[in-house]
Length: 401
Image (cartoon, rainbow, N blue to C red):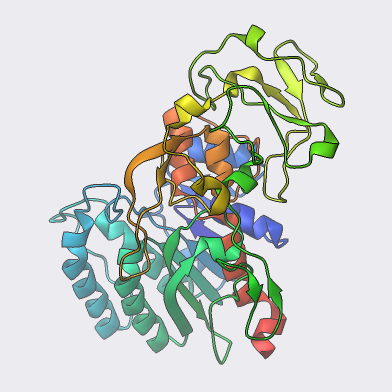
């Protein structure tokens, strides 16, 4: 069994791509509904922070977890940063005791702060073969404290910061990672599959460049910043269209648009099975849109809706770190830790596009209203990054390296 407290869908999709399955625990009914709709049947709706673990000792092969990050996220009030000394102190008490100890119920600046300790409880009580944890960058020192405790419990560990763009995600999302294994002489981060500028790696292997935001979304070089009309894809010979649809829907968004202004697409695009749907095939990247299925016209977002600052950067580089809203901030300068400050101004996209920038497939069966879906997307770990981490912990070839 691979156990996933605070599960969401990111780790589940990553494991599915590797032929594995996650038993997920989450208290959010909409997360559970999304997982069930996506075929992740091993889902328990429960509070991961109070879930009993005694019956799972010796039955868990792997542990994956992305505990709630809102208390530490730079997009919020960050009250969890003021709780870090108390969190370090509790981990030190656990290390001294050599076993899990309950943490205080109150006295936290942010009541969500102690949830970041829960993966350590799961690891010590269940003793899985391997552990993979993900959080925002500011939690990296706490992960190092966890690594110390896990090391004393017989695990070999690695902690550090990984960028999702290095693993094919069209987003410069930097995250603190902890990897641990009980039965290996060494543990290290997965080898990047992409590079900011592309080229050869240290072994002489060709590594593709980072995936740009526009490439992943299949916008094409004419792009939404150049026209209000449906724009052609890069492959002009294909005579296919990228249709930008508009008027607010449960999973889309944008301003209402007169459907009469949208021209009939040329062959091979055809009208879908019901009025108001297009059936299209577009996209130039393997993680881009799959528009071979009918899509409602009500997902159009024009370049005016997207924001005037789109300019050229979306065609040249990945998106900045996406959050729980259908807005992508402009790129800014990087700080000393390698993160990215985001200037004012943002590009408006649909929620389906937001999911694609997280490495999720287009048309994913999200459940809930617009706010609930946006939250699920913004909080998940990008599956390509998560899959690379798990593969590094489970691939027999990695063990022999």
